[in-house]
Amino acid sequence: MKLPHNLTQQLTHTLGLAIINGQYAVGKGMPSEAEICEQFEVSRSSTREAVKMLSAKGLISSRPKQGIRVLPETNWNMFDTDVLSWILKSKPSLSLLKEFVQVRLAMEPVAAELASQHATPSQLHSIEAALNRIEDAENGLDDALDSEIAFHSAILEASGNRFFIQLKDFINTALRVGTRYQNYIYENQHDMVNAHEQIFNNIKSGNAVKAKEVTTDFLEKILGRVESKL
Image (cartoon, rainbow, N blue to C red; front, top):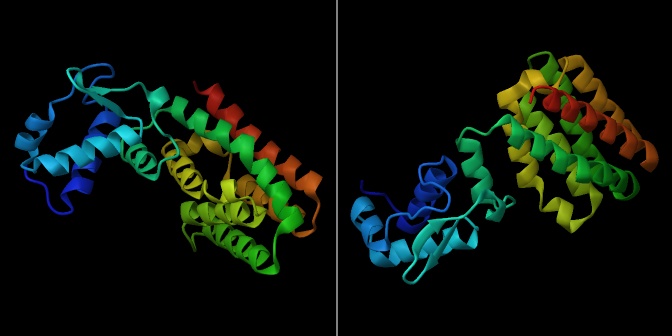
């Protein structure tokens, strides 16, 4: 199986996706670097770099005399953009969706609270524009998923917290995983739109307590529905 350029990145992607898909069992040995070179028709240097990248992402360990082994999921860097991408390309479980929502619940209410205090006029405009897209999507005039990603990403941006801003890729993946279980997330589209309107209105009015409260309520309802299906 010959890989195209960029060989190192493509090999990293191929092996990373295979690990997340379970093609290589946790704790078991993977093919050696020499075997990977032969299987994918790549150089030893490309293979070595791919192994280093996967090790840095927490997916594998590579040690002399022990070879390459797949590490447990608890070691994986779940905030790494590549790992998130591979999760999305695999078959994410409902239990994983639950964990995504739990992380969202831990950070997004605080982000909404901060946005109500620190958002600039330009950032408020971005949140409102995304809300308008959500409303259009209810009528089939826009993409529901893309508009929701834009809305929640804009709130993270408006929070002014550099750590929250760096989590936009995580939110993107969490929402895309959620589309696999759309019926478990929202009771109906109208309720979802109304919840987003409440979040925006409280951010815009500077009501930090209410912005945090309505965001918490929105995500707790999602989490409750997901948990009820497990």
